[in-house]
Image (tube, rainbow, N blue to C red; front, side, top):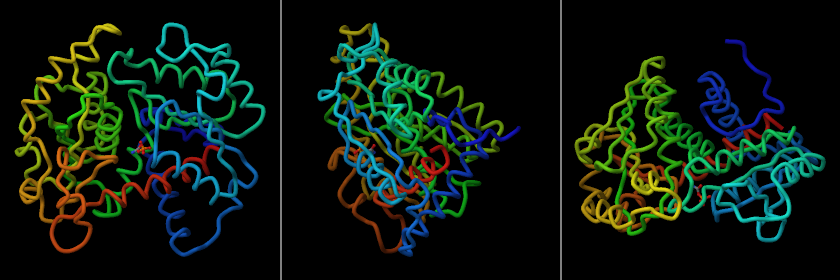
Length: 352
Ligand code: CP
C-alpha cells in the first residue's frame, strides 16, 4: 500500500491509518522521548506554529500534554473554552446552540493557525452516540489544517497510541503479548467508551492476543468489535470476548480494567435512557475490581494500565496502581500518562 504524505492529515481515528503508519508514529514518539529525557531541545520542529484546542469536556492529561508538547516543539497551544467562544452547533446534535456553525469556526481558525484539536465526548447518558465524532469530521471537512481528536464518543486515538507505546516499552514489541481490556466497576455509570474501544483497536491492529472482558449488557460498539476481529486476522493476533473477569486476566501481560457505560444507555433515544437497568448491571458486578489478588493471576511480568483518572477503591486498589517499582507485576499507569506527551508530539510533528 502506498504511504500517504503526513503533512496536513487529520488524526481523528486510528482506523484511518495503516499498521505501518501507526508503527512510524511510535518510532517518532520514542525518538522524541529520548531527546526529552536527555534534555536535547527540539523546538525547531514546530517553531512559531499554533495549535487551537477546543475542550467541550474537562481534562488534566490531554490538555497539559498537548500544551507542554507544543511548547517543547517550539510552538504554542491556545486553550478555547466553548462557553467563552461562539460555540459551534450541529443541527440535531447535543452541542449547545450558538450563532456560529462548525463551518464558520473551522474556516476562521484555519486562517490563523496550524491545527485544531477538539475534545467532545458529550455526556454518555442522553447523548446521540456518534454525534461528537460526526462533529469532528465536520470540522475536518471545513478546515484545511489538520484536525486532531482529543477524545470523542467513539475514539480516543491519542490515548490508544500512548497505551501501545507503553506496551512496546515494557515488552519490546507486540507479538505474543496477551492484552486484556476489561470492564471494571465504578460508582458512576456516566463513563465514556472511547478509551476501551481505541485500546482494543490498536491492540488487535498491532498483532497482540486481545481479550475483551465485560459482564453481559456491557458490550462495546459492534462495528468496533467487527474491526478488531478483522485486524486480528491480518495482524496475526487474536481477538476474544469473555464474560469472566478473572479468567480473562489469567496469564495476561497487560491488564487494563476500566469502567464504561452500558449498552442500554446507548441504544435508547436521547432523553429516554434506562439508567435503572444500567445501575443494576453495575451493582451486580462490584467485584470487578483490579486488586493485588487479581494481578497475581496475571503473567509474572504483567503491567497494569489505566488511562486515568481512575476510581480508586472501585476500579482498582491503591496497592495495584501505586506499585510502580519492585519485582513481579507493576503498574505502568503513570508511564502511560507520560507517553501521551510523546505520542502527541510525534503526530503533531508529522501532520503539522
Ligand atoms: N486519559 C485522559 O484523556 O485524561 P484526561 O481526561 O485528564 O485528559
